[in-house]
Image (spheres, rainbow, N blue to C red):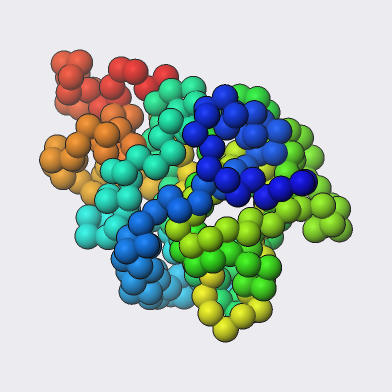
Length: 267
């Protein structure tokens, strides 16, 4: 590929063309540096909390450096989601309203071997031109060749078959991106985190956005509380999933339209 797609694209038609051809794009200088530092500062205690659970449940080996489900009342996540980063692009790719499927992070340390370094795509079923999910990566440290910049096999979102290991690493591009950048990519795209050979961390947020009818990896509205959701903005209620819930009993099911768990316009 003749470039790394490391330029900002404001033209939606051009964005659609790039995603269709390559499957990924980088937006540099997307986040304010102070906000990046706020996120980085909060990751270590959040990781330590999750790491204890991983180890207690016997899944620590492959989870090293991974943090899942950072949607919490006192973390940065609600502030981040309220900014609606790349909202227009996500809507274009998914064809309308969307919700958050997952929001986590990776702290890639020297010679870590977490599961994210396996060649994978982030949706289990190949969906071709019908887009169900789009991925976002927020770059919290400069991504370099030495510290494990993510491999993307450009164009592989167009094909169902998993590429062979040799072919993947011979042909994949690297997401060489500056701290504060955002990477958007098609969930069908084959990719893998690189190995960090430096003494510093290579941190990133990882999240998925889907059409509203897809199940979230965690029930964020129930986790945060239905009452908590009443005080959120309409934009946050939508993206966190408050407008796309499933009733659990007849009381929740038989409600006037404006109080229904699954709201109109979620197609």
